[in-house]
Length: 390
Image 1: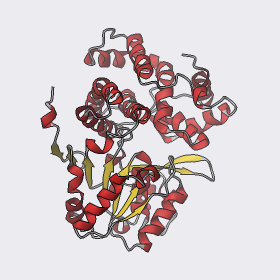
Image 2: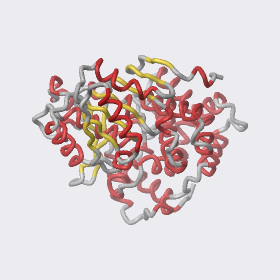
Image 3: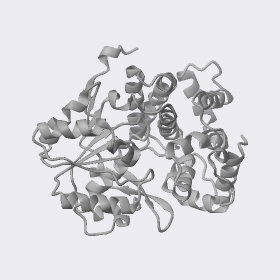
Image 4: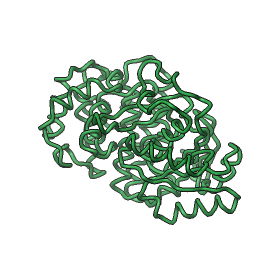
């Protein structure tokens, strides 16, 4: 076991990361190292009004930095949010981006940093084929990422998930240089996160690690990272949920989140394919959607993943290391975290089942699912999750 006093470190994988309590105070130094004198701080609207953000701005000003705030971001960030952020960046003559907040702020911030030097529209850089090669790399802004939730792991991702509101579909915008060049993981920024958001974002971290582990590709490094990330969620998410001021649990969950996003370069799967579709249509919380969908997609993939899940269960030291034992652990964890059992519990019905099936099979994440489900099968899984039928 790692001692609490040792939960501070500088890592250089997959980017430069500073981990530990109070390390947000090193933000101005990080800006100066990247020649940022006038960064635009992009954050969630809920955070923008909190003393935390004002303290960060004041600290930057003391260090001689000019720092403005942009927070016009939806829970599922849209193309318009990105355009508005680019306009704010240019109007303020900014020279870099600080993306501080949950997954929506990080994704929006990374997309803004991409778009400030582009002449093409955002959707030209959707993660399909070699679209990323269209990017004018010289026009991209440097990014410092500071997560305040432990879920998406977007701080170590090379892409952003942005909603195209005209088509009502989530699109993945990708370029290798969208990876933030500095990351600060400070658990003190997460202690005030409400228990419900702690649960939903923590289950999102689990979904990333679990789907990466189950993806049917050869990537032993990603498998190892995913397995340890799942163990950290198992050991520390219940603690963070029960006591938000548990610094060790908060640190370990930030780490598990980062590990999930590192591992899922191997692939994601049907859970995310459906969650992306539902998020675009219903504007529901992404982490909560994954948390609810998890056992349904997991069971649907059973024939392809049963042996791998037995190995994982042994690694986790579950009392019952069978597939059913692992499924039981997932269901127990969800119950402990007060996650709803069905999509109907959050107001989603089956009226658009066929549409969700068609959207899910077209989502890029479906390529990593252990079984190549049809649109009809995705519709069936969706209906099962609405009705709570496992």
